[in-house]
Image (cartoon, rainbow, N blue to C red; front, top):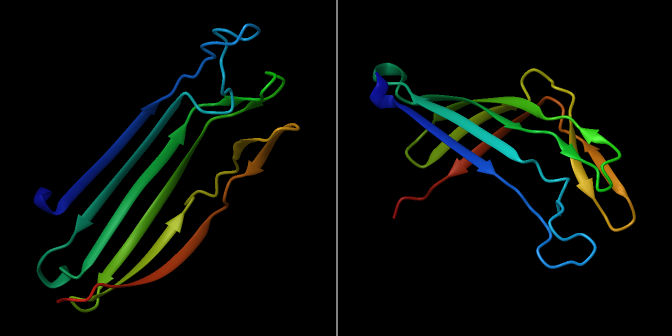
Length: 136
């Protein structure tokens, strides 16, 4: 049973600072970049009569970010996603992905030259896809 399960994980630790700037030397350069990011995903391929079916579940999480002048804080967040797939033929696969399963309200930090800005994170959404992989 566990041979049909795949686990994936990725972690990012990010720090930035000015290295050669007389005014900002040693200060944080990119306050709008999260310090910690973690992405975990699992895939399960069923066997037997259900061998054409696969499922997936995972999450993405990141720590808080700050505005450029440290005037506002963008909270960290965690978003869960899921997937169900069906292999119709050896060449054609179908998938239904549900993103932000719990409809988490969150912001993603942004930055431009004039002022800091934030964007709303994607609300719960569903995507259906068809994948064609030709056999040669």
